[in-house]
Image 1 (cartoon, rainbow, N blue to C red):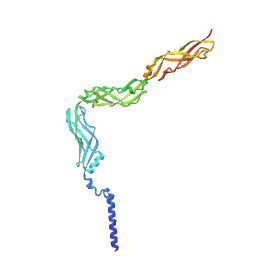
Image 2 (cartoon, rainbow, N blue to C red):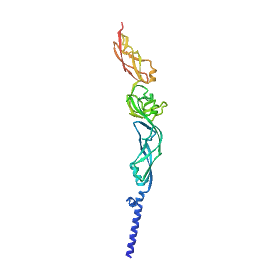
Image 3 (cartoon, rainbow, N blue to C red):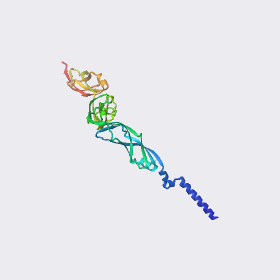
Image 4 (cartoon, one colour):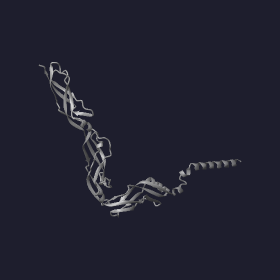
Length: 315
């Protein structure tokens, strides 16, 4: 009787152990029964694989080749997974035996183990091979008027370096009409600043051309000036001099001043008036005269005038 109970307990324990192991994939995690899964066929798509192009770079220029492609890997699951993680293979486009012209060329995938195959999606590229031409161009740059503050005007725009070396296919190079630094910043310019800009080449219809430019970016130095206008100053006197005296003359030390503001404001102003208060003065002297500037005028140079006031005694 005791032996039967012991047998039942052992069977129950083994059954419970089997169920635990099965539910938790213990043996699978220990790789004891995983050989079959590792050898199963699997397919994975690897995106963003760079393309290496083989050709005579000193004589030809190649266009139409994508920088990156998608590769479909198929084969043993373990190898495919490893290659997916390491990307230890390369995609090549071999053009070394091609003359100038247009071709549809198959990609090849190198560096794969024997039990893994690789196919580029799409399998071919339509490429153009041209004789290489290299020329030097002056870089053009244009600062949008909309970026310059309303009270400022462009003073100077300098590009460093002012020229770049452009390399490309012969027929493409013959189409170049403009080589320009393309500014992407849209912020307002109200002071001297420096920006970096990418250089691109364009044809007469302003289509961007497939060429190589060295250097690919340039430094743009922008300087602006505040908008200003020179206007005459007219003086007016206010107040009365002290009893027993009379005002003989008032002379300002400046006949004109420079005023600053936006274009519309400046165009509407033809002169400025300076008020000289002589109230209570009993003798000649000099007085500082602060100008009351018209609305939207930001400042004037000079900001303060000097009036030479001449007072004489009544006879």
